[in-house]
Image (cartoon, rainbow, N blue to C red; front, side):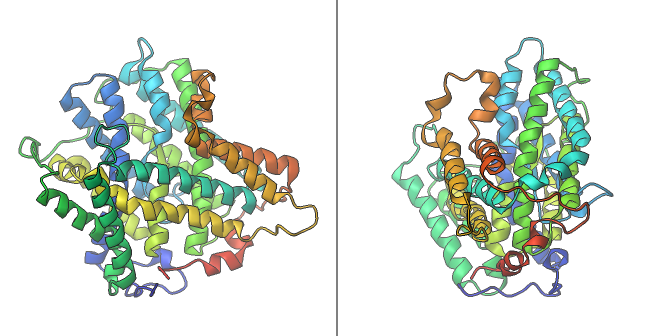
Length: 468
């Protein structure tokens, strides 16, 4: 594909620090928000429904979630001291937490205050374990990192297909009209990315979503009924539902969730290092994980849930070639507004899932493509190499909950977050098999730029800065 034009004023050597002009900055940031919006509001809707909260309280959970998303994203992208990886990252409530939160919600006497207490403990746990992350970095050579990222892309594609069909589990799922809309959005996104002049190529996803939404409105599939009833301003107060309470089992569950979050986030940070050409070493990963933990702690105080760096937005970075962290900072500012202005949030929430699914198919595939790029540096022909075996077995194990969800039905519910998560299963298998069959790297030095982006300059340098 023909490369899109560079952002005016972008620093050639470091596109991460490029600051687009204000109008472009806003549009590019809005594109990131629309990509993550459906996932961001899913957790408060599901948990609120499970607790049988009234509609106004569920609406508050959504606004609190968006407001906290904005704060966490700004911390991660702009950085505050030792917090924030300062790369193009969008933060949102992690889907990994859905099943554990539902399990906690079903526990007698816990309720929302008990959930928030567990979330706060999870954030504190993350802050406490982050200093030790350097000791495990040697267990993440390219064969492990690439395999994990490949599975992240595959698992996300499952989500994209669910969206494209109109919502997995719904009676109308897979209806011809719904699939046709998703296919139109997918085709429009690819064509705009290929033939769109200059800046239009960079907002191909936003334009594809916009055209798809217009079509669904014309067909009468998208309704804005209820918009008038939404207030213009809803202030998000800390501890709106009361002081948090602390229960041992929920707190332990959230600590496990944070462990899963850290494993996934580490892989995504390394992927961003490859995409942007900026070395990501132990200290950068520590700063990123601290921001994840701090975001989770803030989430517990602001009536919301655990936070993670969103992999679907990493896919958008790879698709558009826009590496500026300030674009994601703008997205964080937009989410702050959405969290305070329910009418605007209502409009964004009205975009049909089929429209989002059409654009997500290519974006999520970009995450898998990044994993394949990292795996390309593995020397499979070297004497004694068992890397191909490690990749094959890890992917096979990780695919189990995708191809046969009932396989682990006899496993106790307490282990559900592990055995039902294809990404975590793949990570555990890849790390363990690499330790047993492969070669772990020597401990990386405790300095900036010691990670995959620095140790593999050819990969970082060859990462595309635009669609090609």
